[in-house]
Image: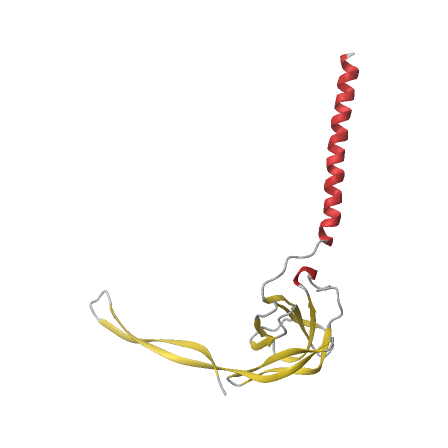
Length: 197
């Protein structure tokens, strides 16, 4: 009779393991449906192959969080960022003419990309130019505000950064094994960026 009870006990253990597995499976199915964690203000995703070197600054209403996506003229996503309400987004973006799309919502409604807040996004009507002209990187500084249920640009300024370079010379004196002193200048180019105009 011990064999029958041990078989029942083994079957009971299998059922417990199966129940645990079913619970884990249910959790794994519904876990992705939970709201995504609220990102910090900054870059979410960059899909463009060009380097992000042109400045973009965005201020938006502080009553909600905002997801900002720049697309090229064909509608292909270039870069996206998250802006927490009350913060200022400062981001480097790839050069080109980009259209800005903004989705707004409460922080707890954030669902991640591409769903964002689960509400329709607003696409601003004009392409925004981001250019490199010699030593100048010409970007945008934008302030958004609510106009009823829509967002609109209430202020747009060029945000220009100049790329400068300074030569640093260091005189180096080395003594060769023969005792001869060898002198030369070691030169280093130090680039730096400063706001201009």
